[in-house]
Amino acid sequence: MRKTIILCVCLIGSSGLCVAQIPQKSWTLEECIQFGLENNIAVKQYELAKENQEITVKTTSFSRLPDLSANVGQTFYFGRTPDRDGVYQDQTGSNSSLGINTSVNLFSGFQVTNQLKAEKMELLAATEDLNRAREDLSLSITGYFLQVLLCRELYEIALDQLALNEQQVEQTRLLVIGGKSPESDLYDARSSQAQQQMQVTEAANNLQLSLLDLTQAMNLPQVADFKVSVPDVSELIIREASGLVLPAEAYQHSVTERPAIRAASYRLEGSEKVLQAARGAYYPSLRLGAGYSNSYYYNYSLAAGMSNASLADQLAQNSAQSIGLSLSIPIFNRMTTRNRVRSARLNIRNQELLLNQAKQDLYKEVQQAYYNAVAAHEKFRSSEIAVQAAKLAYDFEEQKYQAGRSNIYAFDQVRMRLSAARSESAQAKYNFLFRSRILEFYNGKSLVNIAP
Image (cartoon, rainbow, N blue to C red; front, side):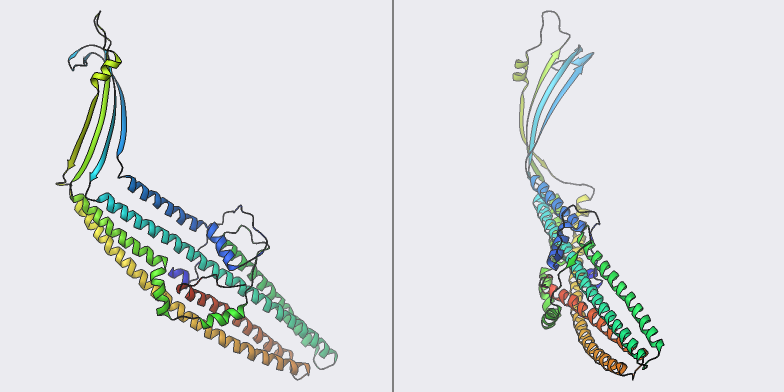
């Protein structure tokens, strides 16, 4: 998850087509995330891995049941072969046999019991892996959603600046007619208007690309006519700024709730059960077995006047039943059990290191999330002040220009500074929203807490 947070991960599923009918509407963040979770290929793969582990648990559990097998055989004898009494003689005959056998493991050093516990721990870990994939995708879609809102606002700023350019051209034309400005100012104003038109086109393209990124993260098959619901950003900023939690508080919640930590804990506990299962091979094993067999012998070389016993008589005479106990005592198996125990111990140590590493990474992520959110909020506040100052400077310069006490170059520079200040403020605003959402996410709050 660390790369997801630091780099605003792009956990994007396959771009395969989805056959579902997509309604034409404005999508909220919650709807975007829900659609992504239902259609993302990577998430589906984690779901399959979880289902496969469920099968493994059932397989281990069923190994406690008795086994049952049947066998049927047909043998033909030619030349010097045994008869039904076991005496060898020159003859041609056949023997038909059948049997049923069953056995059950009575004791094997609790290997099955501990292996089953280990598999159940792995199932819990696989469930947490699925939850982590869902969280990563939710974070990714949240970042893309906010990027769409940012690009939409930058596009609106570009349109506003284009409108100011159009006013500037009209004002310059009137000043040229009134003899207060040279005709070259009008050419410069029109050139600035053309450049701003290019910026509007670029902003529109960026908005379309941000929508494409969002729909691809959702695995939505089409981007045409896709729209998002725009929340009340001003209210969100106030709410997020007042709700920032300290790293220690967020960490205390995350260390017990984050799927990565819980998966590592489950795997550590499972590795301990694997060690106990490996130790079980040191103990003797006891099995109970039972069987039934029968046969029919037919001699093709009998002398005249002799005949084979009937099928019913032979089945009644040749039937055999058995039941018995089998005790296997391990004495020497080429150090296999010892090495498995040693490997299991090493795996426990490795899982302990992985758990500690996951906790350390989580604490670093929480710290980074907090200080990134604080820094983003300070930058947003500064950018708001810069926008106000740039707006005052623009209004003052506009009055000077209309009065003929300023030139087109100075006026255009002030307008461009206003546009840059508004763009930086928008970027700082949505960066703060994303950073604060991450911090709230670590504190157990929902990512979709962005009401339209």
